[in-house]
View (cartoon, rainbow over the protein chains, first blue to last red):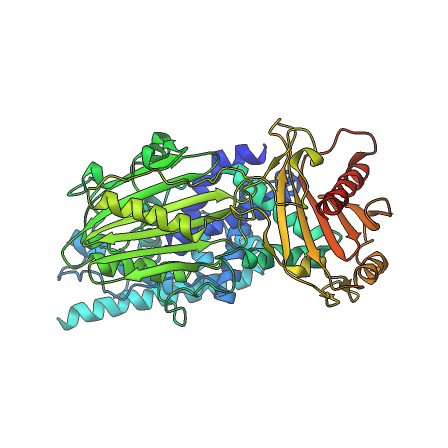
Length: 167
Length: 433
């Protein structure tokens, strides 16, 4: 597969992945462009990999973590609360929407590694072994990141439920 | 609230799926990515790496209108991006109150034509989601010139929201990962005319024009591959902004904007394009529309130190000037030859070249030939091209060939070719006297 063919075939999927990771359209584009440039410089290595796509996604993730560390491209958290749900969470589809909104915001607020773990696990469908390879850490660390991230998200959901009960 | 692990997973998958559905659909250009990657790679391994690596940024800073005289982005002390909350309604897909006449026309930009494919590829949409909740409608258009594009979105905002949308756009641009400079920013309650340029560390120059008339906001993005073009000058950006403003007001544009200035003659003392090779041409690239624009003298400083990162001071006698040349478009790769001419103080030319010749940095990883052009010369071939340093009395010349697959066909290869060009460059300097 040539680089051009790869970009044509997988470029959009990579942008979607980057967007899921960042929730920022411009940042996602920057991230993918940067990752693809890095991949191009080592294209022979990329195509020789068992899973070239995983290789490039790894670059996307590590670049994102690196940018976050350097804070060269801040992400933009929302300062407006989403619409609040009415009582009767389970019965009302609006609750579901509201939960998603809360989760969406909470994911954006996560530290990059826990966030990357959750995205790789729940969006990309990676198992812990694959995630560990992407992040360059142990499977135990992956589970720790996942646990930490999930706890933060559950806490965000809990706060929302508490606020609803107070009304 | 307690939810099961399974429900939590499903919720999270929903969130990510929804995010992926909201992802932008950029037209990724493999060509642009390849060129940019090559450029960066070349910067990394050039034998005069330290000098070269700093050259682009320094050189760009020396382009009139893009250097130290520029203003920082407004309010750069803080960096607050746009706030797009989940759950905010998507902006309307249709034109709403935006009239077709509010857009630029292809006749407004000399040498550009409508690019309907771009608009189709982007689904008739755009990515500038400033204050989406206050948008009433939008129209987009795109124009393609000689390897450059101009895309435009005109967005109508609810009463009082236009200026806030521009504020948000500015806040966003200030937060880009690469340097964004403000060319001009004229703001009032009723109107905004802003030009931003992003010329650092990229395969393309990006210019963003933001023009507002009341609640009608035009965002114009200009992409110009840096291998083919110079960044737009402030004057050109101003003319484009005037044209955009005229259309927003429903007026016609008096004369098409010459976005890509036609090639001019090189200044006296520089190579003629034919000196470089048959069908070579002057570049509008990288150097600005004025030929022989100012350049940074550090390009000719003698690299020093083990890491080649420092350099000995150069005894200059006036500014350095530069001209770039491009080979014919014959599908045999591309290249750029940069010629920099630097007058030196009387008596310092000879020691300059002697120091250059002795510099250990220059000989790393390349072939070196001494002599043969001007009074003295050093010619090096390295991965990615070749470089020549030539002295004519107390005038220093640097020729830098950056090759992307291009190679001379003449016997002797790149090294001999560069020696010949260096000799002709020296002759042009002598002819001028």
